[in-house]
Image: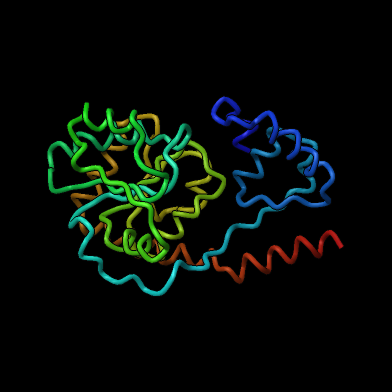
Length: 248
């Protein structure tokens, strides 16, 4: 429900909202991909509460087991996806900047989301971290390698409906730090370190906690593997079928 809740960030919100509302009104059932999303729908359209059912995504997998990629930096933090508005990338950069300034062997890699724009590049330059901030448009195979070799995956978004990258990180034994907001605690449970996404110092603290604690890294990898088992594709299919059956 980003269009409805954050229309100021979405250029076509005024066109999308009435179309979405029209099909939701006609629908006999609505599938929400998280309990958080269900509550978002109810927040905007309370009269639709009775026909919303939650079906979590299942993890299908990226490809075969990731192979070591020697072209990647030896030490890096991974960010995946778009970087605009509610994705909270700018505040995340503020949070990570001091760590990068103090450790020139550490890098930030952003996968996808397009090349850095002028404002982002200027932000990096101002913080003196431009040489450590790389961006890659990647295939599924390379994305899997990025997860597998990263020190940690950071997900600072202010608002997500599910957060599929969490499952990708779990599958590739990548420790996670993420926002303590929206659906992310629902999906990651105890398999992530959480931070206040509005506070750069809190983001910094979460990163430092993982960087300095190898046993915590191993603990998060193990918990991530266990948590991933709750999001099988088989369960997603079965629960989706149940929604169809409830309608027919």
